[in-house]
Image (cartoon, rainbow, N blue to C red):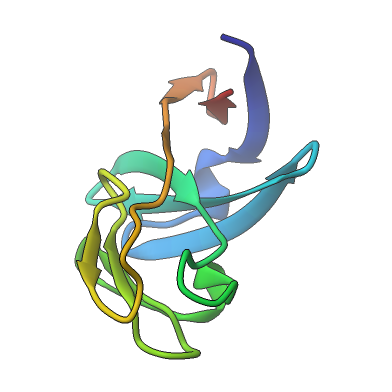
Length: 101
């Protein structure tokens, strides 16, 4: 697995999220109480960018049709989406946030 630096710790404060691109993959990185998580950023229902939606706790809601996903696992929690988001490994090194693909 190859890890890619996507942000610095100060770029994503607790309770916030940021969309990043690694190659052709769009990834949503979130900070939940100081722990970082990464899932796919494109809604599995109709292709909306999840980073343009809202984050409430560990649930991101797509702004297009209100599909919801658990940002810690990628699990689809509410329709109209029926498919989970891919989840990616995240680690922090020397203040850098890295996502593994």
